[in-house]
Image 1 (tube, rainbow, N blue to C red):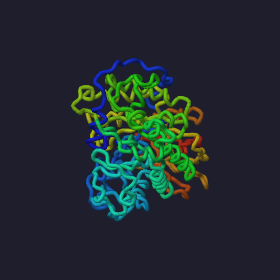
Image 2: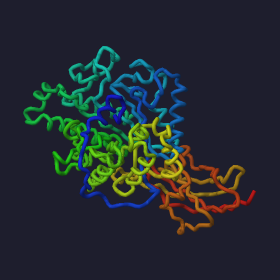
Image 3: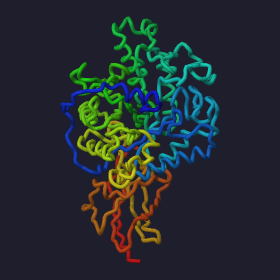
Image 4: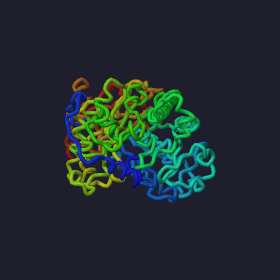
Length: 526
């Protein structure tokens, strides 16, 4: 995905035509001017294929793997991120015990070898402790990055169902046109939905594989068997195969757990306007609709997704596919649907020997441009290692400016949920290390975490600006679902100041309670 392999990197950067006329797109959503939105999805992709982000290499001791992941989450928490998108099935293997696919080779170095613990259960626990949504990222069709089936684990479904497998380029894939393969993929993903407390199911841009010049994907026999009678055009049949996967998986996820989100991060160009006047003013050599057979427009119009995160991995003003052309195009695309729009951001390109990306303002300017469109509800950065490497000081910019304050994940009303009852902030007391807050949650509350607000001076309840992210001091995970008392220490409180604190409670879908009574504390000069 998302440039998960060198091959993908080459494809995604190298298949765009060299020139295009940049014009202002039609439509777009109404502008918003808030510099620090209170609600904004802030996520990072953690890629496991070929050990891109985690673990750093296969075969590490369990405690080393765990510590590496904890360190990454701590870094994200320090940046006020609120979601992670972790690749739990990089090929036809898994980072959790599964009856459908073997253990991933990227854990131990040997596909099928038990790593000695449940990585997904561990990752979920650690993410939720930090109030990070956990989206389980699956690659549905990719079997292997090499073409020798015998190198796969004996229980790999590609060995058990060789008739589903297609060799294409340097890899193996399940043929998306085979109904039994599609059903297998759906059920294997639902296994994780049932067994784990994930917040979302996530796909990237890999459906039919990126095309190789002069090589058609070898599915003629499948087309004749399953599609020719209904579809005169093989391309339409291929799109229908992917549509069926998206529609059916969407429906079944909600049947199992209505609150689990389903989202896709497609290639950044749906279609060029040279082939479809409603497409974007781009000249991409690859497009979702025509080459990957991912008809994202149909998915959006039918509300099969809860969010879409196009990978707009090009700079502002890039002639073949300009960032500032594609963001308003996608903003207009989600209009009238309930599908939320996040932007896939190319952190990996910062300072990559390209003049535009050598500019330290390129990525900050992209994030500023996002704020001009109310349809853009946040960003996901590819990938973890690049985000935390601080290229051209960008990580510092996030921490100290762009993401200076916390943000809540946007609400998706169609998923249900409701705001918890207000909590009772009982006490705010000066301690040697700051101000300790103590509050009580009503019995049987659906609260999963809290927001602590801090105002300077004495602020009455009806005078507090609870919609202003600058007053959000922190989010605090609920220590236990059956616990009623919770404490938090504000270690940033300064002597000689007067503060008023309020606490709200939120459910797992981020509905926020009304603030209860506040508590004011006067700190004397030390």
